[in-house]
Each structure stands twice: as structure tokens, then as C-alpha cells.
Amino acid sequence: MLLDQVGKVQELFYSTDSGRVNTTELVFDEKGVVNDKYYNKNIQRSVLITSYDSYKLAKYHGIDAPYSTLGENILIDYNPYHLKPGARLSIGDLLLEISQNCTLCKSLAKIDAKLPKILKDDRGIFAKVVNSGTIHKNDTIYLLKS
Image 1 (cartoon, helix red, strand yellow):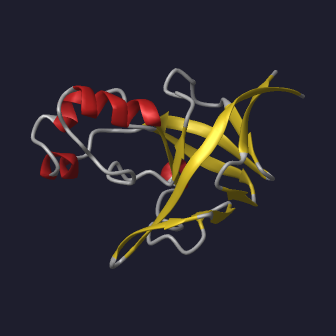
Image 2 (cartoon, one colour):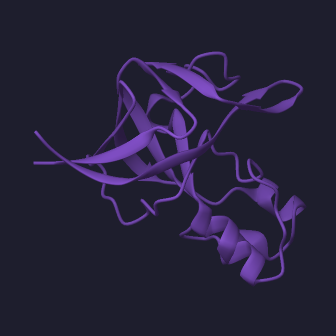
């Protein structure tokens, strides 16, 4: 198995009934992000990965959105949006498989009415957990090559 180092984890988040939580560590299993309110809801969409590029694009259009606004679990300094379903990322001892591009979310319009259109193909990418593991802020991200 060949690995290409592609970036680093910048921020980590999970959702609770009372809001988003920024943390330095996230634990994952085959059902998703442990302690996240969306845990075990949809395995194909259990982890949302977003690139700094999404926030830069919003800012370019005059929208200043704080990190986690896009609903991501993992904010990274690498743009993974070109990855096809089945591509795999290794972070810490966690293995993720890209499952689909992130779909538009009407809740983004609450931030700015233009945001859903601006981030149509650049909001994030969903992944499912291949093997349980833990990741930390600043962990290195590797793209597995076949």
C-alpha cells in the first residue's frame, strides 16, 4: 500500500443538540463520529471533510463564515473535492473511504443567501469509516494509492 502525504488536520468538530464543539481529538468507529449527534444515522455520510479552500471561496465572495459553519467534522489544508468515491485517506490510526460529494444544504442560506450557490461543488466531501480510530488536530493526512 503506497501513501502520499497530502495535508494536515487543522480543526476537529462534532455536533451536539446544543451546538458545534471544537475539539483536539475525535474518536471514530464504523458508525461514524463517536459522541456526534449524527452518529449511526447514515454510514455513507458519517464524516464530513471540508477544506480551507471552501472558507477562502466564501470570503472571496464577501462572506465571513467561522470554521465549523459548513458542518464539517474535519477541516483540512488539502482540497479533497476531486477525489472519487472509493478513494481512501489515512489520518492517525483511522482509515476513511470517500463516499460522495457533499450535497447542498438549505441551512447554509441562513449564513448568507448566496452561500449555497457559491459552495455548490465546494462545501465538502463525505466519507465512511473503514476502521475505527482516533485523530488529532495537526495529524498528517495520507492519500492511499493503489
